[in-house]
Length: 112
Image 1 (cartoon, rainbow, N blue to C red):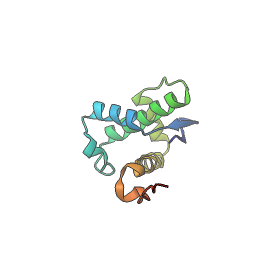
Image 2: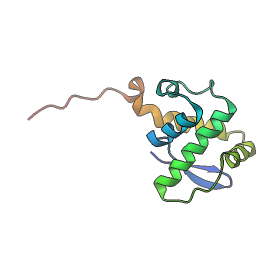
Image 3: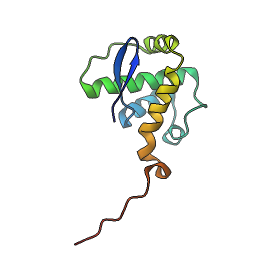
């Protein structure tokens, strides 16, 4: 799922899928089980990298250029104190289908 977030003076696509989370894990050293319980346990650096990864893969999915750095993202987050919460909410919403209690029960498929 792609969301658009106003950051750095522009609406930019954000995607927290497997590729963005794999890169986030590679950069930060976090493992899959760590990603299920992010939130208040993140360091400031991890928040910036998470946002950067979401923006990178949002741009890739939309075919848009991506030429900004982790430092650029940190500067953008400085400009709007609500962005961190908005990005973490976007991350949480993107993970809902992967968390059993949030995904809801699926009805069994019945044969004809």
